[in-house]
Image (cartoon, rainbow, N blue to C red; front, side, top):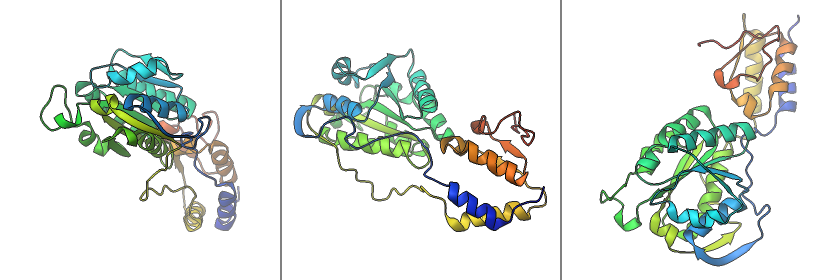
Amino acid sequence: MTRPTPETLAHRAAAAAGTPGGARVDTSAGKARTVVDESMTGAAALVRSLEALGVEVVFGIPGGAILPAYDPLFDSSVRHILVRHEQGAGHAATGYAQATGRVGVCMATSGPGATNLVTPIADAYMDSVGIVAITGQVPRGAIGTDAFQEADIAGITVPITKHNYLVQSGDELPRILAEAFHLAGTGRPGPVLVDIPKDVLQGAARFSWPPTLDLPGYRPTLHPHGKQIREAARLMVTARRPVLYVGGGVLKAGASAALRQLAELTGIPVLTTLMARGAFPDSHRQHLGMPGM
């Protein structure tokens, strides 16, 4: 088979390029009506924000610090699935996100409940899966005093989250939840942690929707750079024994058909990582399988 020129490959790649898929997230008003300064508890503001963001399912276990959130959640359209262990809640949220393309949500209490989420949060980070982990925390005045079931879960998860928040006021909850979902589901998806002190959940809050996001430093790459496409095309055409080694980003971007078209156009064999299983047909004559396992 005659290989196409780099210019041909670059032109076709640029024509097919679009915004990466990621998780579906809408931080606008969506189905929610516009609300300005409605008074409620922080717990109610949390649940109202989840409803406005289109959340359908939350996986979790109640506990002391997060318990105030369960009163408004009981009357909410958001379905709560009770798990037997917080780790299961995190993995369930990850599975939900992978199966639906939406941001998954898990919830746990402070201390051991929050630390039980560390493994699924790390898993979601390594696999680039968008989830939001909501944890209860001891009251603000008790933070840093080695209070009962206190753990610095925000500090613990810094290396394994795209971002995390320690909420200081109930008024911040709509904005923080909207930002968390935006961060988790855009660019390269990943986990975001929202840690909420118990007194914030129990205290008064003013709920306004939609909130204004404040993420000045967050600029995810949404479109490929033309020079990078041309350089990749040049490398494929000039390589003596080229192989396409593709990862899970192909699936997240909905680019499986484009990958197959590229492989068949160039005649280059394809290898997939574990996270890219299914991105290229196993039965295809150019598929060499998944190395390393």
